[in-house]
Length: 148
Image (cartoon, rainbow, N blue to C red; front, side, top):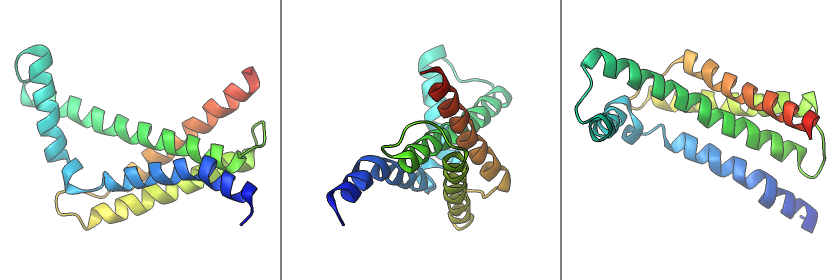
């Protein structure tokens, strides 16, 4: 491996790999709906001074968990695009499509893992939501490249 290749791996690919590991680690029991519900319940009590009624809490909890999917995979999609682009400039559809495919592959592995974790559920809809987050990142990249 030459110096350039080592620098590309370290500077461009390592952040994407580390973020993918963080996302996959969140598939554990610790980040299940039960546990995130406990954390969120405590946060809401500290902010508003009392718990929300169960129906309202469930809606807020659901929306926050789904927003987390979009956010996690937006970041992963952006990091994958950055890694594919490396030292080059501009925006290319090929980089964007590969970045979304890589993020969707991580999302699929993530949901597959959750299938085997008793406190988690596995959903193809979550993979689609994750891919949407990664796709949104590509749109942001393209917009930013055009306006800079």
